[in-house]
View: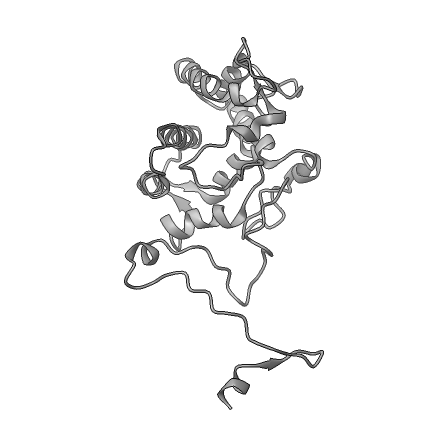
Length: 252
């Protein structure tokens, strides 16, 4: 009789077992309790297939259709989210980012000359070679957007997959694990995130993640110390770079 109670009947008359429970934490494994993954409420499943990577939309629980303002998602439907993230720095939209493009891009969003120059050295010194098509490094240290997915490194949030797509589950996990119940991150949260996501024997990934989050904080520079979730999502798909540049240009 107990076996019969464990079954339910679908509309087509077939007997099926109920879905297995989702166990995301174990009391005697403390880290699984401290860092619980994102799980959608049963009564509000607004983001379908959270674990499926989106090729061209930075979809989140609050923004399941990604960035829709000014037709962003429609205009960028032929680019991966990682390519969208980089597009702002490709000023002539030829798919190639020169060091001077990066310098001007960082300067447009508010970085000073020194920080912009440091950003150029870090980005083009590390991310140029993986994007070239052959074996020889590019003499001009350019970044080629067709292969920018090869710049994926470890010890990050995992929001970008190895093909440059956007993983909603991994993005939502950032806030579920390191800022539960909040829609913002503080510097303290970021340091917890960097420690929590750190992979063994991965100094390039450690430094890359640190640089990216430091640059994000300096770029957003929140007056109350809170980097809002929507602003961080805009960093991933690059849409916020244009907003920051326009805001800065209007303030001059």
